[in-house]
Structure formats: structure tokens, C-alpha cells
Amino acid sequence: GENVEQHPSTLSVQEGDSAVIKCTYSDSASNYFPWYKQELGKRPQLIIDIRSNVGEKKDQRIAVTLNKTAKHFSLHITETQPEDSAVYFCAANPITGNQFYFGTGTSLTVIP
Amino acid sequence: GAGVSQSPRYKVAKRGQDVALRCDPISGHVSLFWYQQALGQGPEFLTYFQNEAQLDKSGLPSDRFFAERPEGSVSTLKIQRTQQEDSAVYLCASGKLAGGYRGNEQFFGPGTRLTVL
Image (cartoon, rainbow over all chains, first blue to last red):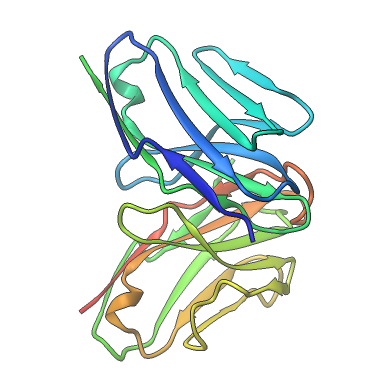
């Protein structure tokens, strides 16, 4: 089955700086890659996603890039704010399967 | 509109007890997923329903875990003879489309935190 690895596990940045979180996946059949933000004790919420037919997608301060050849995708947050502090999960969804395979999460702390 | 809801939000069980966790998906959503999230980890797949049919239960860790969705809406995850290793947050997610379809966004509930003493 699919194996998703996520790095780093923890990340601290100064307010206003950029944050980058990277994920790799193993199954070339994966073609949908969502990113979820989970605040402490709350549900995971989708913040951005990308499909395999595009290489980059941007939504205001958040962007995701996908390299299908290398099987990796990354989340970029610019101009970070304290409210960006949370755990971020990447996931991969093989077209042949039903489930999402999640990474182990990145705990992002934005220091005011 | 209303999102995915789960109940109870917190459950404490003594080892050996049976528990039942409920998920109310978004109305009209075809897909329903259960995930187990251990502390500090990402959600791990347990089982998947398309309407009332349980199409994938490959993630259920043992035969003590059982899930149903008899009318294609509300789902219940039951754990029999709970063990300490069952302690985790159990997340339910629903999707508008049938699973396996590219880009079927999953909407998560708040989870049930199960603690087995």
C-alpha cells in the first residue's frame, strides 16, 4: 500500500517568515494530495489540495507544489501568523483505493 | 450547513468493556470513513462505507472492531472487550462522492477520544 513520509516533525518560525513542510509518497497511482490543519483538540480541516495533473496551486498565503516524478509534494506558508500554529498533515489518495494515507504530522509554531 | 458530528466526544472505558462510537455524516454524503488517530500521529484508516455497504475493512486492527451503517447515513463503530492499546481518537469523515474517485474531499468530525483504563 501507499506510504507517506512527512518532514519535519516540528517547525518553529518567526512571525512573518515562511514555513515549508515536505512529504513523499510511494505509490505512483496516488493522484490526489490534500493538506489538513488540525488545531489542538479539534478536527482536521482541509486547507489546500492538489491533483496530479497540476504542479502547483496557490491560495492566498498557502501554496502546494507537486513533483510526480520524484513523488514528493510540499506545503508553503508565507507571511506566517500566530494563528497558523497547528499540526499539519499531508495525505495521498491512490485512485485505486478509498482511503487517505496520512503523514505523521508537522507541529508548526509561529513565534510572535 | 451542519458538518460531521460524533458522539460521545470523550469516552472512558474499563479494560474489557464494550464501547459504541457514533458518527453523523453530512446529509447526502455517499462515503463514510473511520480513522484511528494515536497521540502525535496521523489518522490511520480503519474502514470505508459507500452508502450502507462496507466496501473496505482492511484497517480494522482485530475482530474486536466492528462498524455498521445500516441505512446509509449514521454509522457506529463498536469495539468489544476494549484493551489499553485501543486508546486513541476515533475520527469519522464523510465524502460527497463514492470513494476511489479522484479528489473526493473528506470532511472530518471532531472525533471521539477513547481512554481505556
